[in-house]
Image (spheres, rainbow over the protein chains, first blue to last red):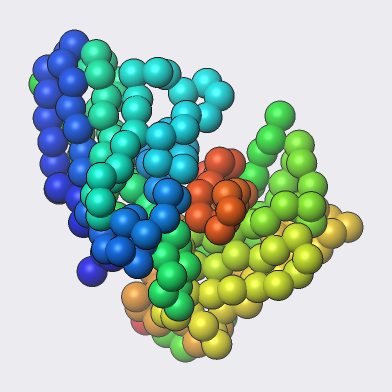
Length: 111
Length: 119
């Protein structure tokens, strides 16, 4: 069972915006501004898209943005494109004995 | 160009051992914080371990006492020694560079190596 809760799937049409949520507790998402997001295409390694809640690494499209409210972090993808279809994972620092936790992943389908 | 290349995966019986390697190029392993993250077939990502630049090591509760992370500075290579393997350790194992105040996020990833624990 994953420590962070994500919806199993979301979908959207090209050009639309979608948001993926990532819900934790005050021991992880809610307690620190240490949330990151990864995109993973089938058979490939994860790719860092967002770190420290809302920062984008160099080279990541500004169509990807992150935010947080309370114990829930969110990844928003605007102007959906076919190549955005992938699995997305959130992760966070946690004050538990295992210091890094991931969400269960969300499959994004571009209709 | 930064590159991480894992090797050493394969089929092993329950209770057996395996050592994974992660050869780095484009940056120095010993000057960075390096982690192993795994992904069971069809499942999500799971953090396994981290080694600090100073040499301190930390593990997920699920592998503590069975797995050992280490590095060879002369070979610029990260390792994961896995002992007492269980079926639930079956996964693709990725090495990754860890960043952030609490080393919780990962910018460079290898392509992964598959470990299958089965009789």
